[in-house]
Every structure is written in C-alpha cells, then in structure tokens.
Length: 448
Image (tube, rainbow, N blue to C red):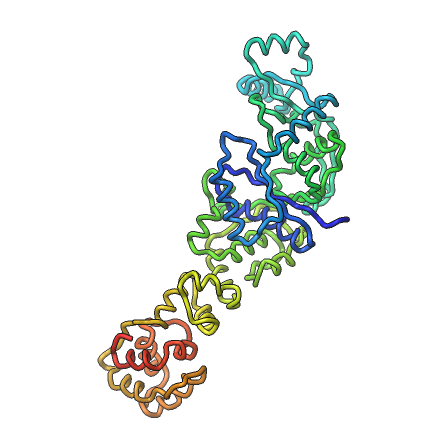
C-alpha cells in the first residue's frame, strides 16, 4: 500500500474540545509515524452555523497541539465537486426527492413506534408520480434528496473494533441534500475522501452506523471505501459526553488555564487504552505509542485533575531546547542552567517567570531577628567569585563549623533570605544564578 492519507474534518461551528483533539491526534500522529499525509478539512457547508472565527480558532488549537496539517481544505470551496457527484447518483437512480416536512416525518416516526416498528423512513416519496411532485412544488414545497440504500449487510474490518457490519435495511435512507440545496456531511465527506485519496478514516464510535451508509455511497460513486477505525469517546468525569456547543473542556480553555499541550495530547490519546498514561518527551514519542488494537471499547473518562498533574510532570521532563522559545517569550533568561534548576518545581510553565524574578531580583529577603548573627556569618563565609555549580557545597562546608548549625536550622534561614520562599528549587542550582552580589545583599537583610 502507498503511504497513508488521513484527515480530520471538523465543523467550524464551535471550539474544539479534548474529544475532538483525540480524533485529530490519532489521524495526525498516525500519518506522521507512517510518513503519510494529514489533511485538515473544514466541514463548512452549513453556512448558517459555520464561521471564519471558529475556523481560525480550530487552526490555532491544532497549532498549539503541534499537529500542523500537510494540506488544508474547505468544503465550501468544493461545491462543484458535490454537484457532479449528485448528478451521478441521480443518473444511477440512487437519489430521490422527498417533500415531507420535519413535523410530518416526526408524526410518521411516532406512528411506527406505536405499531412496534422501527422509526425509519417509509420511502413514501418513491411512490410519487411526476404529477404529485409538480403539485407539491406548486404548493411551495422544496424537496430534500435522499440516498436510496441497498438494504443489505455492509461489512468492514475496523482498525479498533475488528469485524463490523451494519444492515442498511434497518436504516432510513439518509438525506444528502437539504431542502435549501445545501449538502450534508454524509455526502461531502465521501466525495472528498474519494477525490483526496484518503486511505484511513479514524473517528469516534458515534459514526459506526454512518460507515455502512458511506460505504454504500462510495460504491455507488464507483469507488472503494477507505479503511475505517472507530475509537471510543471521551467523557467528563461525571460520564457526560463532551459538547462543542456547551464548551466542555475546550482546548482554548485548557490553553488559557496553562495546561501543557503535550500533556493534553498524551491524555487525549492514551486515556481509554491499555497503555499507561505518562508524560511524553514529544509528539513523535506519542505517535510511536499509538496502537488502535489497544483502544478500549468502553467510554473513557477524561479527568481535568489528572491533566493538571500530567502537565506538571511533563514540564519536569522537558529539555531546554523544547522550551527555549517559550522562555524568551515569557521574558525569562538564565538559559539552560536556569531551566534545569527550576523545572522540577513548576506546576505551570508561567511559574518559571516567578522563579526568574527571584533570580533576577530585586527581592526583599525574609529574615528573622533570631537569625541575624547566623546570616552575618553566612555572608562572611560566601566564597569569592567566580562561582560555578560547586559553590554551594563549598559554602555549606565552611558555614557549618563557623555557625555551629546544621539541618533545618541552617538551611531554612538561607532559603528564606535568598529566595523569600519557604520551599523551591535546590539552592545548589539557584545560588550561581543569583550571583554573589545579590546573595550578599539578601543575607545582609537588604533588597537585592
């Protein structure tokens, strides 16, 4: 098989949430790992709800996650392609006009339920004569167009769920064109997958039934269907499903809360699998972990508290090269030595700025009157410059016998004076960054 081509096709009708990110990441990272192509395809034919602002937000969210598409498409720019497919389906007798209103369709569904029948469309429109259709259109009715299903068992080998089948005889003939002439995803997705050479469609399990329909549409258009994989869905800790409309766990909100994109990606991909949820060094490492056969069939709960912990753990392992640009944008200096000194104490990346201010100064030291003599001895014991990473052990080795202190009585007053904080990064790493002049001032109770 040639290199894979995968796609993520969001509707720009709201902000992406972590459930959408799960689908996007599975497609993007699988394509990356296999040397394939990843397409971002905006499903924006619903002009009443799609907006340029949401499309822009989707692009920003994906850039934040680090999954840059190889190609970007807008379905709204491909209408002639869908027009041609529609004509082909009409010529083959697979599309037919139906005139029922939504109220009439609901009445039919209720009637069938009362009779113990499945609430599927009864294909009454297939029995209309030309005169019937002319009369209905004369009354001002405009048809929606339905795809006539074969009513057969449609089977496929699912990447996640194994052998799957849908009996399309149990389904309503799907509407492909609304009464206002706009196209539904069911049609446009198939046409685009065919013309863009999509080889794998990885999406949520809520699309399993759609797959039987879309395979029939692809075959009616003379094409082979791609390989399908339907992963389980993420839910809130309460078990409630995620919703773009309600803004559940949106990527924008997680970004604004300071969560790490690598942590969001790892939790979105690994939750609900048999793999351990753990920090990853980069997206290539995460891509190597993807195994569709290890995804559970049960819904997976995405816990924001677990994300917060994973974000911190991710920061604690990130190399300087991965954050150098972000530190510069934050106004943090100190280079790799500073990052290695503080990363283990960060809960949020923005915390690095607070520690840089401790290093950079000026800082008001915290000192107690009873420690004044000890701090004076500590100041007098400071080794001369130049300072390197061994300055702190040398200082402590001299300070212990000179002061007669050890343990907390020695270390705690030094930390308060030098950093103004009860706890934090190791003084061994911070002291060379603070420098002798500022350290001397702080130990003397002065702002430095």
